[in-house]
Length: 379
Image 1 (spheres, one colour):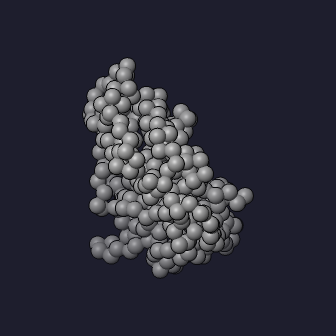
Image 2 (cartoon, one colour):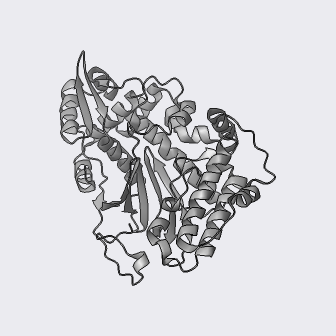
Image 3 (cartoon, rainbow, N blue to C red):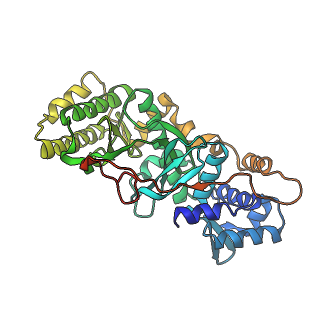
């Protein structure tokens, strides 16, 4: 579904529709397909009202219906998008979103957005699909006793892990986009007016300085933050147009440095970046020398992946953060929160929150290395 269609569908939702979406979201902790009887009971509304809302949500593409031994429903990414945008809008973080994505990948969609004051932001929707299994082992430590783990929930964990990595690295003064907010599977961060390093190629004026800044940030990330990016390459470095300042982006694959394969992942990160600069700018860097400099004096435990994450959880308070208060509470307490949030007298009216669509923006830039796509946004 396009953003225009998503926003239009969201702006049609009533409090009851949002309530039903929230109830299904909570019920996914127990059910892959949530029985309609459960939705009626947990929403505390009549069968007729709930059925009408479900038909509407199904028509809008926000829920799917399954009929077998019982009739059940589950959220789609469109429904999850709507819930994330609703919360971010209510909190005054997002007011408008661009119709054209900055980028679409296998595991995320990225858009320009604006806050109520007109400041540009970036919103990244994590979308783990059935072809993505790279995160599964990491998620075991958060899954616990959940009987049904949906792809939506894994996308949420992926988003929260990326957001926490941004918080930790930003606080350590690593050059990353400033993290703004996270909700469900959506990460909101600072907008950087730039292009990916892979798109600039030989257009850099000071490639040695850019490479030096990247390597410095990799070192600080390893030594001070205690993590490894794990997927660093010219495709995950954003170059600010005016200053040529490199920002390291795309952090959901990070691992603790105490993971037994962390050094190999660090070596791969270094090889990816230095290979690019060697090919495009004839800059030679000794990988092993750089690796020794970064890791010198750091005692590594070489733990299994799950153990390494458990270790860093206690140090960084990551587990509580990633799960969030809601996931720590019982279903009963969460439903009570929903009841308070959507309490209304009389008719279920529309929420007083709307989301707009950004107009296309055209920019001129004489430097051919910094050209934008046809929609006016950086590629």
